[in-house]
Length: 417
Image 1 (cartoon, rainbow, N blue to C red):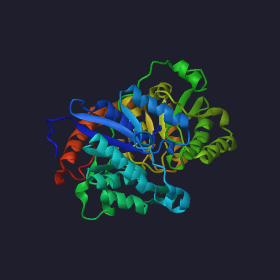
Image 2 (image 1 turned 135 degrees about the vertical axis):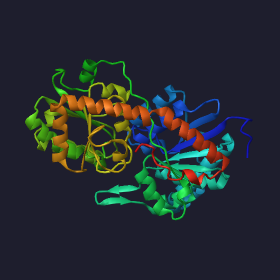
Image 3 (image 1 turned 90 degrees about the vertical axis):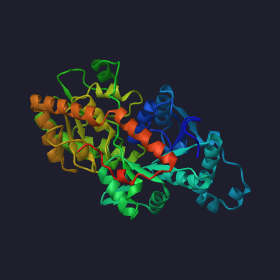
Image 4 (image 1 turned 30 degrees about the vertical axis):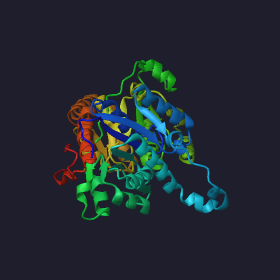
């Protein structure tokens, strides 16, 4: 084991690709804040094609580079060697892809003399734990869920296998830590909760400029209700659209903005068709935005987060930092961050009527909306600022690299209750 006085601790973050999702926002916040006198941190993508839209990958990667974060792809540092095996046994070659990728990652780990592997999400986690076994390098696996289906969540065998092999498993909410600890009996000490710490989004663009850029009505009297999140079924945008129909019937000087990226093109097409079916297409804008998310927040009057399933969404913390009044669902770990009636309104997942009622209340009761926003900002300052997360992560990585098991901190909770 190295002497910590000899050089900085080398932490390698491994993720499939880079896109505009919560995990990548958490990594970027961490990368910006880690003490560079103590930590040498870099990010490695192991499948740059993980996101179907290359514009999304390139835009997100540029944000990392602008922040001074070293970003590489596995294909650059350890290209796959040509083999006749692929030609003579293509089916078997395809099935061994994860193992081959793990071996290539192991080459990078040895070359860079990595002290700790910080893997993110399921597929990168599996590759990382295998590479960690090959190189005897401790691995932390950050994960927020298994696979989601309309009738519930499932944990694939490969994910369960990775959870068992990982030295530590990190997540952002208490509920996910409890669920995962049930999958690996008698190993509660390996699961940790460190909530997301996100910087307050900023923007140099004006409200009117962003309204034009996002194709919103320029009349400031028309208020903007928005959800920021990937276009995927479990984020509940379809529920928000049904709620929007009810809201617009009562408060017509309102427009709905849905901002996000997503590989599920059929779902995006479904949302567009649904908005037409409901007769609200002219009052709904659905778009991606490759720039600073602070630009988007500039135009939002009410934040609506309609998730059917979630852990601890980044967008909720961002909205809290800006004192935006919010209506959110009680999915997953959301009640750990939003206190009902105190820092936001909380409604059941999938209930468009309740969501609409909450939105209408915030549009009509300006004093309540302002008070909820102020309370949310105070809660953000106390629990979800980036320096709080970064301090916890610095201790966590130091412990991980040292191989010390601090069972007293297991399932320690978010400290945000």
